Amino acid sequence: MKRLFFAAGLIAALTSGTMAREARPAAVSTSFLQELSAQQKAALGTYKAEAPGVPTIVIKAQGAQLIMAAEGFPEINVKLNDKDQLIAEGLPEGFNFTLVRDKDKKITGLKVDTPMGGGELKRVEEPKAAKPAPKEEAKKADVPDVLGVYESDEIQGMRIKGEMVFEKGKLLLKTEGQPDLEVKLGKDDSIKTTPEIPDVTSMKLVRDKDGKVTGSVVETAQGKLNFTRKTFPKPPGAEAPKTELPDVLGKYEAEDSASPVPGLEVVVKEGKLFIIVEGQPEIDFTLDKMDNVVSTHAPEGITSKFTRDKDGKVTHLVAETPVGKLSFKRTTFPKPPAAEKKAEPEKKADAADPAARLKALEGVYTSDTPGLPTVTMRVKDGKLMIEADGNPTIEGKLSDKDELTGEGLPDGFTVKITRDKDGKVTGMSISTPMGDAKFTRAPLK
Image (tube, rainbow, N blue to C red; front, side):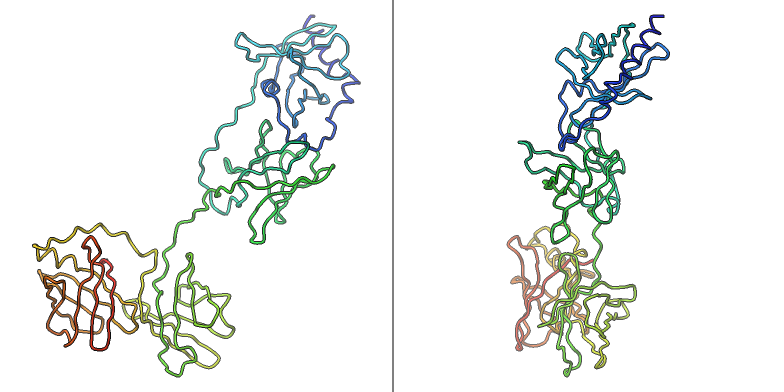
């Protein structure tokens, strides 16, 4: 019978006419982001009685406001005093709700006293403490570049902070002392949260002229609140693997002396390929599977294609134009950045070891001077063999002064090996009656 009176008393409190009128908190423009006190946070949870027919009570937060809710009854705004009592305006005389703590001061239940009886509801569920966000793998397309901390302009002497994070495949808005809100972004940069934030009529991202998200605007019934994005963490998966650039870099010269374009250069900047013609805007492009140049900035009526030799090496760029076909021959062959591999550190060759000195010369030597062939040096059967594109292979001899000699080397040609301060071979210089040229060495593949 005592339990029956307790249930009846609790139901009477929950259905009190005065308290029902307090079902929802009044609109306060910043209540949705104010913080709970440590005492309020500790009270959050679910409280359940063992007796049948006694409603289960949930104490939750809405902004800085505590709410007592029970299924089938209006929600009630409550305050928590320093005696752990839950106070609500209009609570009938003789009705008291008091938190129960154990010897360690941990909240274990809710004591309810009514004129018709009393009892205790046991706390059966505690709010889980927020854990650091685990590192997650995600596709770049899944996570827009909006993550970070957002801070409001000063309002009523305070600044409000919230953080946009990506956890367990969801975009969330986290605010200290508040439940996490799931975020959905619209194509118009609108922000929708689940559950919705009280008093907020709309939220929208703010971008700069380059399209980068720099903040957000929150519209409430009382006015506008601006937030500035303070941190810019990379979305998970944003670091895409670097793709290897095609081997098309270098200078190209017109094969027809009457060509309106005497030459051009293909370069890479910030991971993008560009065609540069002197006096003309740079054209960024990509290549399709057929080596066609694909660009939205190419002049109208012009299509271009790279051509390869029998070994698959790009040797020409051919352009179809309204005035006819223009062919450009590739004259330099720098390696794409992604193709440059870190070579094993080379030991300084021992001057007393002829075999080691020859071995240190092995490599591919290229020059930026137009028209000069690529030179390859390799050791075969203890001999240094020198191969220059379009020329017979010759055997080279290395003198103590790092000069290369050999049968077949034209008269008047002097070839000298160049080294860095540690003695590592970096290239060679060639002096000829027609001028001088420098070659840079790269390791053999």
